[in-house]
Length: 255
Image 1 (tube, helix red, strand yellow):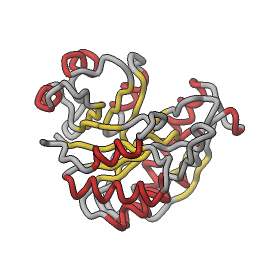
Image 2 (cartoon, one colour; image 1 turned 90 degrees about the horizontal axis):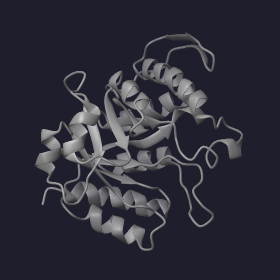
Image 3 (cartoon, rainbow, N blue to C red; image 1 turned 180 degrees about the vertical axis):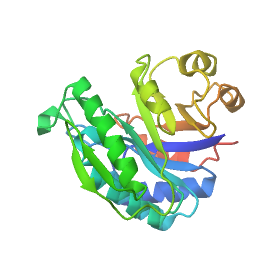
Image 4 (cartoon, rainbow, N blue to C red; image 1 turned 90 degrees about the vertical axis):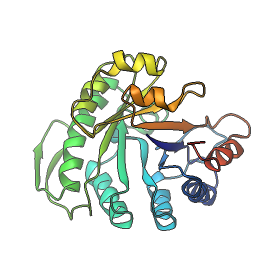
């Protein structure tokens, strides 16, 4: 079992980098950032990719990534370039977490991007193929409804896994995740007993199941249900959330 912190980069960016360093020192295995353009009128919202580059330079062991990047509002070739660069800074320590993104107005339609869920899902599926090919150093020749790409790119230093997030009980994200490297379900009913029925057996060895860690459930129960990563996070609108994150980052998740 491995343990990660999922962190909203909605405070001083230097604080976020220091949190990652503290998390590594405390025994956490992963440090992932939310990927939003806006949140509310009170929160500062910083770019996760800039922060991940800074974190990569200050850490040596943590797995780094986003939970999640909504590919439907990003150019996939730019995301591929982010991943290639980050993986050269932190070889073998990079994961891309993707999803549709939420809410559909705040980060999408209010800024002129597509808000419809079905359309964003179609864009996501196309973008995943483009990103995966470019990051692997393959020539991508793709003529789709939403993206047209005829290019190759310098490959990442190592393979970059892709995790797909989605709200339960919607089955489409799970179907999508089975085509990639892992599934990060969001919603209710993610206790160990329910996960077995919800997710089923892994499609292949090495496939990751990444779930929120309920405080009263032993890690061994999750492991028996097929979970490979347990996630702790803090909701950023609660008063004192940065201090709470600092406390989390400073505790060994295994004790």
